[in-house]
Length: 395
Image (cartoon, rainbow, N blue to C red; front, side, top):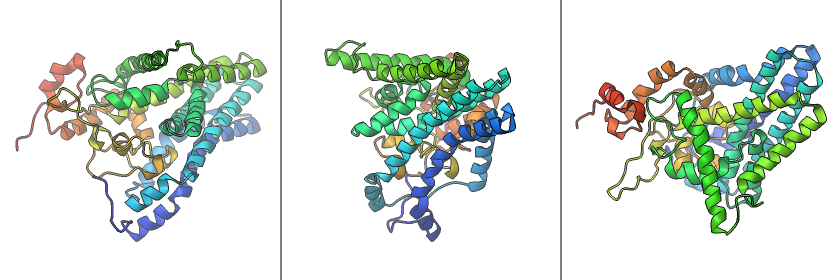
């Protein structure tokens, strides 16, 4: 259950924090600013190593600061939720972030194309831009859920186009949210499945599912897949247009950079999908349908800094239980599965499968109370995993 207080605030300290939290969401603009800062430093000091700056900041500094700053357990009251939901300030923060992500991408592309850099420096620039594109996907995710607000939806499409992930809104809203935490969902990681095996299933699976869903929608409207109303094609065209303009202005040297920035951006979303539902399974009801998605079917991470940077994406339990709720009102729950670190730290762990399994497998088993029939198991290792971990507790 969410930790709420009828009077509105848990403590004087939380009252002060919640009163000013709206301004702290502006920290979501910090990460897309980093590529521009790194570009300025690289040119000023003639040191291309600065173009790597975003990578250690994202994967090392943010997790360290998460541990220092701690967690955010403050929740708005019901009265505050009703007020915050209608406050357009929070949408404007997202619009600014969406613009900043394109500015960062274009600024990094300009820097890469106008100075002579080594292959290693170009690699760092591509990875840095890709990591920021992954953060942009979090912004696009939030905007893309506002299906009743065309302005926010289009802003979401534009920021997702930074790395060419044009099929995300269709796949995520109509596919992932419907089938989350079930074997039918390519974006829900299975217990015992490494990140790299998951990626081989999730990346093509999400694309295929999105295309099928969009094609079906267009067919119901008696339109072809190549219709200008195809929401996936709309975003891909915008990506190709922007990438094409940068290459035409600044040269083909940008092609490997753009491909790397886009690909590593996709990889960040794959990392997020992997950690958000690993091993968790919704049970089937007597009628054969899966139970309604509840907060317990998502891994939550409530570290204050990374939640601000990712506009509360890490309060994932509440997001899946209430997918239309805007980020500023998502709540912390005290009885849901918890990740031991923020997303950036868990991404690093996930890329080392033995470490990931050592940390997360016991947590999944504890969540299922030792009953592996309640876990979303990797079918290739199902029997071995059951034999190793199945120890149901008796009441």
